[in-house]
Amino acid sequence: MFNFKTLKLCHPEEDGSLSSFVGIRRNKQGELEFRLPRGFSEFPVDDFDQTKRLFFRLYSTFKKFERDSTRDILDQRAAGKDNAEKQGNGYRFKDKENNDVILYSKIALIENLLDVYRDLALDVMERRIGRDEKIDYSKIEHYLHRAVYFPEQGHVIFIDEMDLPRQTLQYEATTLIDLFCFILSELQTELEQEIDTRIQELAHRFSEQHLNHDQSLFNEETFEITIQTLKDALDDVDKHTAYKDDDYWRLYEAIELFLYGELDMEEPHENGTYWGINNFSSVWEDMCNTYAFANFGYDNIIYADSNIIFKGERIANTKSAGFFPIFKRLDFDDPFFIDFRDKKRWMRPDLILNKENNQNLENRMFDELIKITTRDNHGLRLDFDVKLLDTKAQETYNIFCSRLKNAKTNGTRTIGNSFKNFPKSELEKQKNWIIRNTYCTESADIILFDWKYTDIDCFIYENEKLKTDITKQLCYELALQKSKLNSSIENQFVIPWFYLEFREKNNEADHMDKDILYKRLQDNQLKVLKGNFLIIQSVYLNHA
Image 1 (cartoon, rainbow, N blue to C red):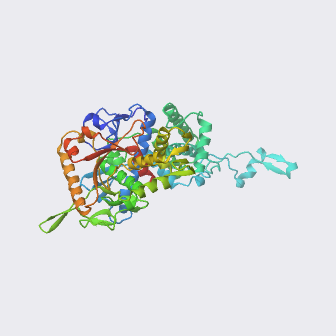
Image 2 (image 1 turned 180 degrees about the vertical axis):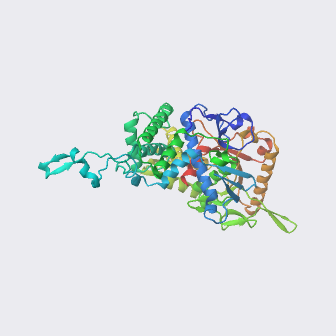
């Protein structure tokens, strides 16, 4: 297993590369290089815990993307992505813009360990692997001279051991299984997966017998000594195990690969150790669409150029131009086409949010996620408590309570998140602020979203790609305006952004300063949002 402390981080903005690759590969100097997503210019290069957390979260993100993109292929139905095909341990397919996408989400040293756990029943193996001193009763007469006689116990004899081949194995778990469970437990903790109680017990037993109380496999200070201890334990097990069946070798080889393996980038197609994706924009779009459906709800999304899996089902319910799967609200008449020589040429915006019924958003936020309970009504003032109902709104909840405390007036008292004699008008003001900022919107009835995986500089300086993107968004807006004449429409680009520190305004998104944007963006009132990558990713993973 590689050490996150020695993993070289690479910010794509720094080297000016146009590559959209995210993952781990070797650079020209032969070093393992962790190439970060775009928008991560503030990511700390020397923070072990942040690097470790990002790696495991990206690992889980790629696994979900792989499952969602290939589920129909594995089920032998129509492909989830156009022209998808499996190549070795990776997948190649075309995205909706006809770009070639190659995903290698398998890291053999991790995957093999998880595969063994899924395939082998450890409770059965505990009875089969290890050393034992079994008594062979067919040869017992040859060992009577070694027996201890107990007349007072009903003439019982006791034979301690026989000189037999040790092929019948002990009933208790051996060090090999304990070692396996320790690694598995540490790995599942980092992957934020549920750990089986029995796995935890055996992992704890190994830790008690072989490690100090503060040692951990993925700890910056103890990584190297822990890895060495595990290698020594594996070597000792192998030396003292006489009988080794197929299950033993599967466990042993999975542990050995994990402890001694690294990422060998020389032959990625053959051994499956190449990790990453060459077009992260496809992942970013799925992350954003999942976030939108989770937070805005089906009722408020009228169109989405996506076929993600959400709550176990693909969201697409129709096809644009007859063959592009999209989501469209049934009462929405698709206006995104251009008539040319009696034929329609179709366009597909990323996502459209209908905010005409803003009350639905407020009810969702303050009924399902955050609860305000009134204890006493004093007319213009209230006594109330604020309670978190859903942990996914933890940061929004923290912001809301912080703003309430900062907005308190004379006569207002607070204890924790309980408020006494608080102005009603101020409470409504802060609720409206949360709704407006949580949903990345202001006062418009309809929001056009375009998920862009690009650098922030691309929206500051003139370039051909930006000109094309602006033209497309204005075409979408014009088509939508004709079908929604009485609605105000807002146009937004959303790019990924890593926030180094939590700040009040850095909730789900933060607008770029409009004064620094490319002039044509300003003239057409197009906004650019820096979407909080970690929050959007968390929602994506919670809807696996």
